[in-house]
Image 1 (cartoon, rainbow, N blue to C red):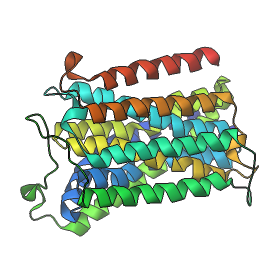
Image 2 (image 1 turned 45 degrees about the vertical axis):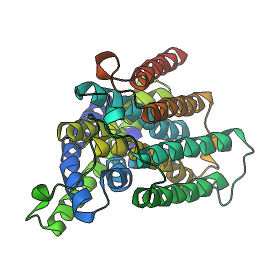
Image 3 (image 1 turned 30 degrees about the horizontal axis):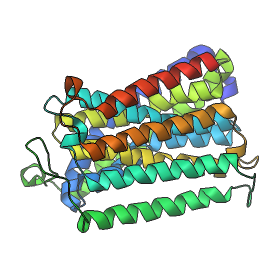
Length: 344
């Protein structure tokens, strides 16, 4: 299935169908992830950041690799980084649905804060690579290897901190701690949960490839910029598992999993740039992009910084029970998307 051979109706059908599959199957991943967090003893924050974050990121990862392999550097990068921006904005929707208190207050977790700081560091490395000298080794920028190394170090640091934290957030009446639910996992066979989790992840992965192919077709048929299509269309479509799983986790009371899944998924999504750099065979993908993807990277760093401020400050109740961080994320995200639309 080659994008240049797809008609506009078929392109739209594939994009809509892939998006629907991602949304439906992605919702099942939350319950499975919550069970596995209890069964493995990893906890919601670590499990959400590593496995749930990686699995819900599969559609976006495959979409970026598909675009990069087709020589669409800006589509690949904007899909990856645009997904991080969209998923951060999804936390605002989750915050609005949790009526007891500000979500960032209730889901206090040192692990989530470490993953948020790690995300800023990884995005900064990508920005440095794009604005630095165009150096490559076998067609891959050295920054891609550095991003992988820093990501692995950050995960190890987060796991160590969970087991032996240097400090703990103040417990309040609105704090929801991550405690294993023995009743929920009683009688559940672990291998069945793992098999269902893997199958669901495979389905959303295939759907992500379909969205990636149709995204290339949308660029060709509509004449819109690759950055706009990647940031507003394919990124949002492939990020639907994060939206569905986050809202479902909030409804189930797994607040740490909800926040950890978004931040962990965002951290994993930076690796899209690494995968895309390898798939892009015309040199460093960081130097094949224009100012628009760089604008999206900078915007995403800003959104993550506000989220971190909210996790540290832990404002208990703001307007409509959301803190200043959710308001800032929503305003800057919408403003950034408006800039992209008028820019294109």
